[in-house]
Image 1 (cartoon, rainbow, N blue to C red):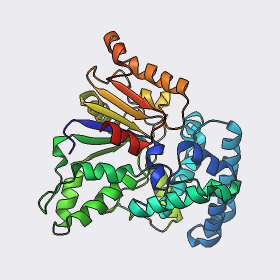
Image 2 (image 1 turned 135 degrees about the vertical axis):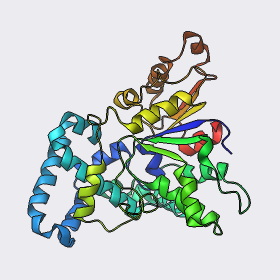
Image 3 (image 1 turned 60 degrees about the vertical axis):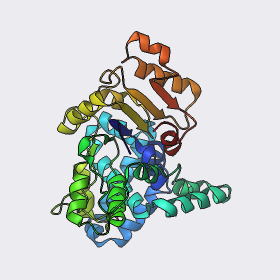
Image 4 (image 1 turned 90 degrees about the vertical axis):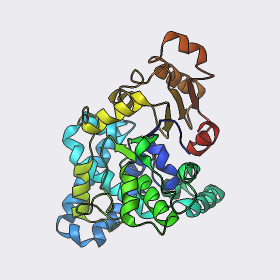
Length: 346
């Protein structure tokens, strides 16, 4: 049960346990010849929807890859913010990679088994194999969170209208929505699908930079099934749904996200990089109340980097709260993944 207004702020790392790349991994997969490029060449060869423009598309995509690689900018989102004319091709590549990850994404026991198998055999992979296999990192926090708010009995369908649970995500993927829909449909088999959807529609999941496509249950007319066949019409349409930092300074989603953060009792950062541009777009930390508890992962970061994050968030709090920086208001954990953080603090 979630009895306090809790806002989750999700970065790319939050989707990693389910087969999606982190921001750093996405850059590697795009720039190196393994991963994205190997898969995309097969797509160009086998997909009829791209047959007539195959050579041109191959040249355009490879041209983008080389410029992005030589830029040495840490993320494709930030690169596109600096190079708006390249944004259409960048969004096209992001859409392809998100749908490619969706094809292989897993949850629950399958994700756990895949993660264990990869960990066991990682030392036998060469560099190229590692590029495509270094996914499914971190514990299954979707499963853990779902079992925190699910009730008992056929009439225990969750009511999200109290606003105690909401998500602000910087991710373009749809794994969270898909997980909740599948979980509820199979947890309450005697409840109509319409009532399942009505329940989920009250759950706030705000994609501040857009989403590759709504799911069918979210939009019966324009929605796209999970794990669809990838083709040019789908990629073109999905690329248009993606926004970049330079485009999305103000929107209804951002306004609502800031409102949620300002009213939160708890803000939980999962798989989030605390990049200044993303903190700024949410008006963090100044928008957070002095009474709000903040928790966050900083998996893979060094102690000094974690201290800098503490300092960044602390700027929005009154001076007396500095006394509680390591005890009460703020906990940023560099040695915890998303699942471990929730088990310790939720």
